[in-house]
Length: 580
Image (cartoon, rainbow, N blue to C red; front, side, top):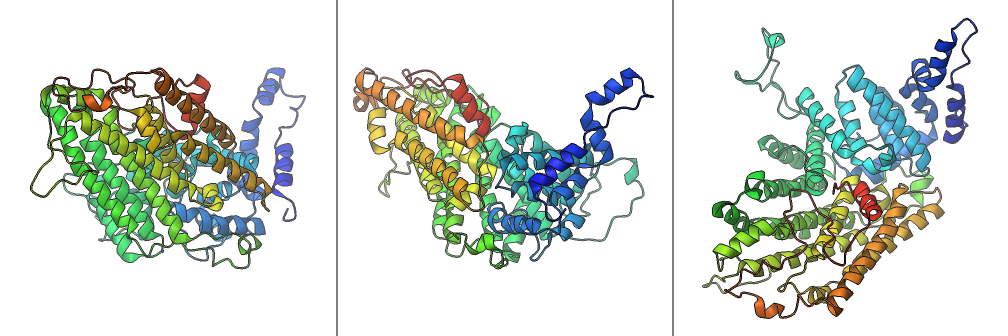
């Protein structure tokens, strides 16, 4: 078995697992039933875990290389799951078999078809463990996190991140990872089995447990921010405590990176509660409408402070694979600047949160009600620094345009940081990073649909060449895919990326056509600067293309020249996890 390739072992197991012909003593009806359910027979004979161990034996060189690759190139990008230094594949298999399975699968970038086989086996085993056997353990929980973090690897199996996260959040409760051990109060919920139970000795969570808990928060927060309105985990006092403990311990160099990722999403959590809460978004009263814009300036300062902090970081390092110097696959690998990689990843998250805040300007309801009741508001803009003894008065319509421009610049900056990532990093990016990129692209398409007398799209497009931004992204992904095919060993992104490259180019073309239509035939932008701040009008009558934007939702509309066909919209939304 050791000398055979994964491909040979897979084909052999597939042939061996086919059910034999039913014996002549069986009824024809029963024989027909058996022949119609071959997978059931295979599962009875051999578990998914047993099959997986034959495909990738833990003592094989292949398993060692895959584990080394995960630890050095993939785990640092998702620092919530770290393995102790020197862990061998066999040790991992014995202690955490589900985690062994998922790591081997997502790290197998040389063959996407084999990845799908591994993913199917993992799904069978984790379903059996959780749903049939009712198992619950830290290793199983970590395996579910890793599987969710690289959701795009097995997206062909129709696995949605929004379906996986609830399982992880339930397991947090089952394992009581959301609090310190033995901290139940006299008013805590419980049933008969709690009667007479003696409280355990005071203890504290391990760093491994705290990282995993923060990982669920990060995954659910990014998903809620960028993809779908789910009931994600809220940042609370215990999460804050975990951040402090992990930061102070610094067991791994990536722990500082972990904490900053969580802190960025903590701000996103605050934005969601303050700006996108159901009560405020659905309010028709003046107080409800005013509360949201009045809080934007404060949130802007909080977001900007985080950006300044990231820019000033000097000691953020994701370590290279120095612990595996004997492996050929790493000896000749192009090692990126680890500090630069980490900063770029943090800046992608930071600019995503910026865009998440600024997209509130797409909401007609808030700004229309404000314009009708308040001719001017004392809001300060990030781009305007008033004298110390004055407070500028900014009309809602001007403030809205300012937010839209800030949103576009945030998206442009995010794209620049993404383009700065090396090929090796792009191959191993976790799915939430792709969600962040996709969400911002969809916000861009929505902003580009706006037509209004005070929104000069032609002028804005001179500041930012949106089509070129998308074309650069398309060219970069296309080049990464080509280089991966030529690499030794080959490395592949999931198949869906080839369609994404094509769609990015098409969207860029549609944007260019929309801009051309504005410049040649659309006169709604004429006199834009003359109408800004006009006290006789609220400035919102002519806003087209914008609308009520909920938490995490970006609408691809069809108001103007930017009309997306169903195939384009579906392909983009399926990959980036956005429901339209």
